[in-house]
Length: 374
Ligand SMILES: *Cc1c(COP(=O)(O)O)cnc(C)c1O
Image 1 (cartoon, rainbow, N blue to C red):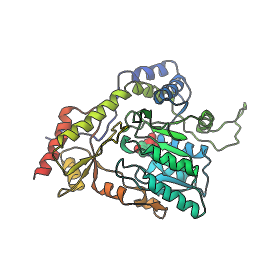
Image 2 (image 1 turned 180 degrees about the vertical axis):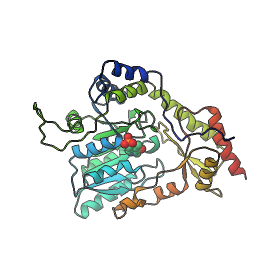
Image 3 (image 1 turned 90 degrees about the horizontal axis):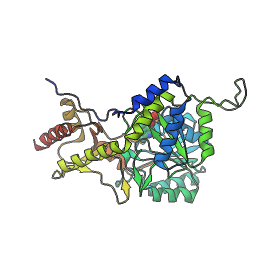
Image 4 (image 1 turned 60 degrees about the vertical axis):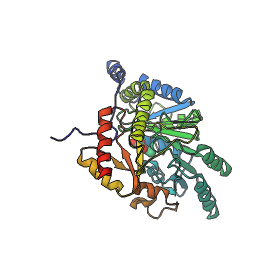
């Protein structure tokens, strides 16, 4: 008989979510206004120690609104990490702007600050200063924030932190998403906490967040009838889903601890295997370890491993395919050094759910050990 499936990262609810959702039902606050939304925004802002927060329908919507707030328009250029999920840069296209991709460095897998400076200088030389930088903290690992911000400030380009995968991660004690001009989080089903689907935009600039909320609710001007002087969006999170989010926030630290334990488990399980390399935290970097990633060297390929796990009913996945190699972004300028392409070819995401049991982790490790020993 087939063994039960082990997922890469599945939703993991706590005990309080249903209470908040029930309250929304009982009080008939089931739409896009209500006490759960207000409370979720406040609680999320408090957790991250940031001034203002807008709860939205997705992380993608949050990135889109961040770009609008920063004034990104058709014909503009926006720099984005190449090594990421397409949702990081699709909103650049929604605005009719051009993504400029910047490759990774090997210490964190995130945007290379040296290459970033080269890219900005080159774009300026060619006649256009980038309108914004979308900095992704992949798999929960903080980017080299100090170095990136130094470059951004030198050229006065605003930074949007895509912390969709990095809620609960910290850089020298400060929450990711709070270093840039704006930050975004995602509560999609596979992320560290979920609202089934949802996202948030945060900033120290309260006026920007108010503007984002206005745009997210169809941009209605103050009038008794429907009056519009801006293009609006239907991007608000519902009060029901915000209730799930409130419950999830209560267990976020626990989820981070569980994911970090998964990482420690894998790291220890393969301590004597030079063919499997893990990503360490540089000093002062604290990753939520959303997904444990490994780079596979030697005789067995990443794909051998993924297929072997699949045959054992275990879900794993290659690392993100870089955006500069995606057909849809062919022809977009890219500043590359080969790092993200190598990571894509050699890297694998191991099952990392916070609800995984030790037996399940052991099952994954046993399959990999048996593959490597053959
Ligand atoms: C999940 C994710 C997003 C998008 O979030 P959604 O809530 O799914 O729209 C953006 N960027 C990265 C890096 C992600 O992993």
